[in-house]
Length: 256
Image 1: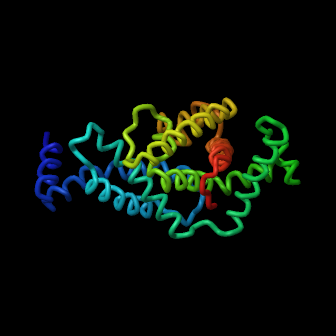
Image 2: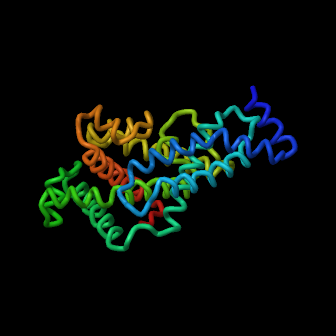
Image 3: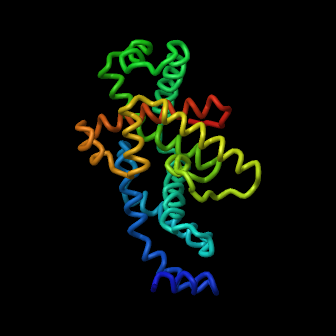
């Protein structure tokens, strides 16, 4: 009831004190979101405190733009704004070196080429052999590019319709779109992404479900699937690459 009063007071007259209290109230949501994103990041230059700061900017934006008259839970609406702000700041800071981006692009292109050639999902050994490296080196590359792949997928989706992968695949999600052409695009992207997830190998499909739907961390997913966190990261990276390729095949703007 107190939170509802704060919302009503803030939206009625823009009371700054109410806004500050709302920000304080939802800080735990920022920290949870930052923790989940941090668990996917291997780059040592990205600190938890930085992600939290980026997320607070997204929280403030969400509070300012949230419509209390709509039948949408604020936490659901705010979470994608918070995560989107983190992703956006990571991109602006250009934290990934060019060599890492080149590796990611090479892996992505190899998966696309082999899928088209074989008519199925290639195995890790097939991808490694095609590139000319051993399987251990391939796994190391997947670990290196894991953060970049996840960030680039979500950045691509958010740039188009300001919603992350999980929200696109949920039925009944209230989306922040208003123009007819945007609605058509959202519907098309949902179908493409849903099909991309359906086409994933079973283990990768399970991982995507646990990560985006159940919102579990890599550690929790590893416990469920009985694999290490590093292996979870590798499988996630492969799944993201496959999904990005599906989206790029439908003439989407993708910039690694």
